[in-house]
Image 1 (cartoon, rainbow, N blue to C red):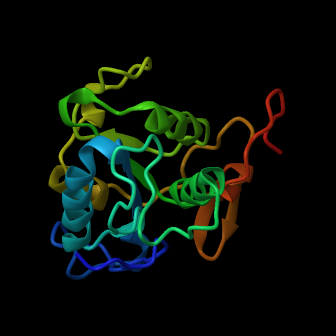
Image 2 (image 1 turned 120 degrees about the vertical axis):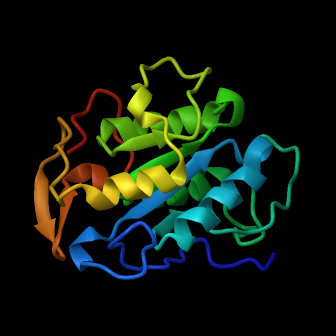
Image 3 (image 1 turned 30 degrees about the vertical axis):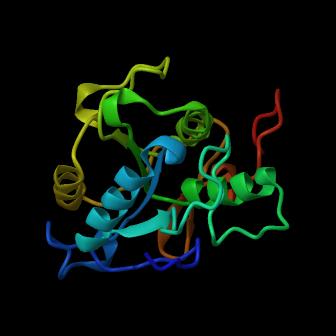
Length: 197
């Protein structure tokens, strides 16, 4: 597998389930999260499936894990000089800039870092879907949020484009022809006790 930049974007328009043609207002991006330490092969398969359907994959970039077995996964494309916290912050910015998030959860396992990411994703009210119902996550997950990649792409491709609901601490703004959620989209951490503004 050839490593690529962690910030690559495929930017293919989604018009129908195959992603071959379409209206630019129907394109969307996805970030894929899950336990990279335990399920990275499944994450790669999901990323490749989304791309084959014409969906922009914002995160992760497919790259080789250089520290198997470590608590925090580092990739060949990660700067060796950056601490884990800065690498996670950059990944979180990409995740929060996506139109939706897909959680790869074989057997229902998501892991600690994924739980943290999901907290921020939910705070920003980014639509979230799962490959399997999570068993180690203490939040309600509606059955319709557990969906395969192809079915999800078909579902999103059929829905009319509309702005997402504003998070309590953010407001919808129009920038670059796309609706954005105020401060949530910045990727800056929210201080405890703050409103995120």
